[in-house]
Image (tube, rainbow, N blue to C red; front, side):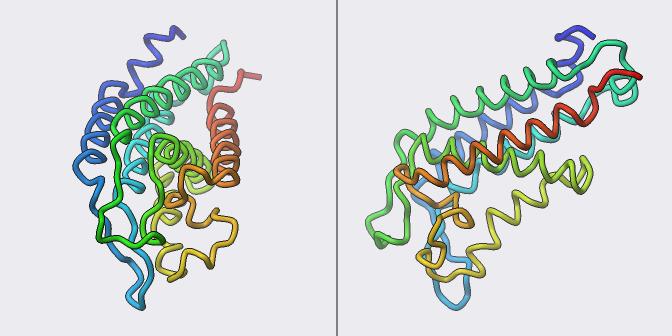
Length: 207
């Protein structure tokens, strides 16, 4: 199966369009934040959650395509699937990174209410949520890959009213600042696991 035939079934144009729109949303919503926990808590930047959109789009595209034709292809499609994920994720990292270069915290928000978000933090959020989506697809099925990343992006802020309750910064990863090292390593690990599961899901050789 040729690379261009493979990518034609993967909705590249739609994914790139969604990523561009997500970048515009980051620019427009950068200073906007909201509070999830009704009992109090800290404000969550919408820009930190926006990478959820391209992450789910990329996960959906990774599992679109020729289905049974790929499953029973003479040649393995693992390399094509890996190249597909790397290309779209790389494009998303570039576009969102450019869009997030000018993120600034609003003056009215307290120091613990808005992380030091920038290209590194937004990129970390993207790969973490993409990895979570790919893992979710392998657990719940391809149509439900959004469950884990959506829960990760919302539920911790309903449960933890104080960001200091998450000592490691893994549950509240998307709101960790640029200097947070452990969340970055964790995001890379989640993404690597998700990609590994995704490329081995369909494209195996016929026995």
